[in-house]
Amino acid sequence: MPSVCLHALTTRVVTRECRRRGNALKGAKHGCRRYATSKQTPPPPKQQRAAPKPLPFKPAQPKATPNPNPKTNPITRPSPSSSSSSSSSSPSSSSRGYEDERRPISELLKHRWFPLFGAGAMAMCVGLFSVSLITYWRTHPAEHWTPGQEPETPTGRPSIQSPREFDQHLDKSEWRYGITKVRRRIASEMARGHVLEVAVGAGRNFDYYDWSAVIQGLEPAEEKKAGWFSWLSKEEGDEKEKKEDEKEKAQAKGEGEKPKPAKPSPRPQLKTKPQPQKEHAILSFTGVDISPSMLDLALTRIRQVVPFMADQVPKKPSFTKLASKTDSGEESISLANNRIRIFKADAQAPFPPPPSPGVQKYDTVIQTFGLCSVRDPVRLLSNMAAAVKPETGRIILLEHGRSWWELINGFLDRSAREHFDRFGCWWNRDIELVVRAAERAVPGLEVLSLERPGWATMGTHLLIEMRVRGDSTPAPTAETGSREEKKDEAQKSTGGWWSSLLSVNNDKPKTKKDD
Image 1 (cartoon, one colour):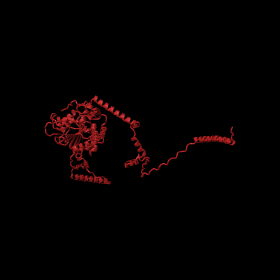
Image 2 (cartoon, one colour):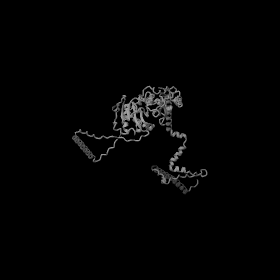
Image 3 (cartoon, rainbow, N blue to C red):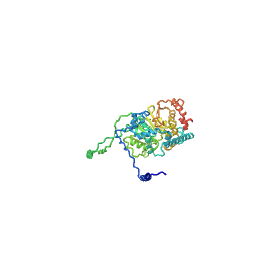
Image 4 (cartoon, rainbow, N blue to C red):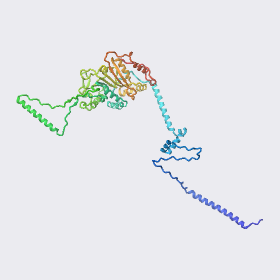
């Protein structure tokens, strides 16, 4: 057995013991440190200091990104336009727009499915509605009648609204469609001399007539303005008149003669000022209508528009109370020394002559929106032709009826009955057909011009100027008609694809009523 050194043995034992105790101490130290750090919150990270915002007059410069590999990624300098756009817009918005542009379609559909679905549903609804409407139009043909052969007689009077509401309703609609300009043109440029207005209604043309010649002699004489001491002058004048009367009586007694009657107080006389005659000034006005309620509105407008009529027409006039019967049995009102006359009469009866003695016919006959409200429009045109002067006289018509577009005619035909129930007129009449029929039926009657004013009316309104020839040559018949009439009839007989779509009865021959 080898001898063991006692010193070496003790050194090993002590070393081993120290190692064992040292590991235990290290473990306890680590455990305490781990327990202490689990209860405490970690320290907050160091916040980076925000860069100061640039001043308004110093736009922010785009940050240059570092280029790690200059060989593969060359530096590209931004253009002035891109730099200005980037400086004006925030970097967040520009980066978002760039990302949106580079999004794939699948991602765009995923994020914007709701507006796309709404647009598709709306397009489908519009398509279904259009298909159903076209199917209804194809299966249910529109109603259309020959002018004057409608199932109900037109009255021209509103049945739902009162006459005043009806007149106020027309203000905006006529201004919107340009009818107000046409009325002004008719009354101020085309009317002259002795004027007869048929179906005058509420007098919507009164605002544009030139009444300067009609009101001649109606201006009262100028009176002296009353001053502060005017009552003294009146008393002095009365005393002088009394003294003169007493002197005359005394002289009459002394001479044995009868006293002279006292002088009546002077009345204000009407002053007649000679005024120059204007080219389009009317000399007299005669209005004819069958509705007393509409004539009440016409009298109200005369009081408002014509000068010096406030003394002759009350504020709330009533035609039935103010009218008096003429020799022919018609009710009428005479104003302005018989230069303005309003008659309650049927438009298809003979018209009264002008008020001037020796004048039997009118210079201008005007009618606005009346052919749609009478039973026999050709007969009405015949009466108007009999009342106008040959050659020099003019018949002016402003009417509404069928358009040159078959699509608009389809809408007029389908809503004609509802419009008749509300306003009492057939607005789908072919006015041009009526005028051509009257031109063939009435000897000497001819059309000078026929136009459709305004684009907003879609060709449904017509302005027609006619005259009566002075010679006794017969009017052109249907066989010897003009080429324009034949073209118009050919176009109407051969309707387009809109007519077939709307089921307008153009294939059936239209019977023309000739008197």
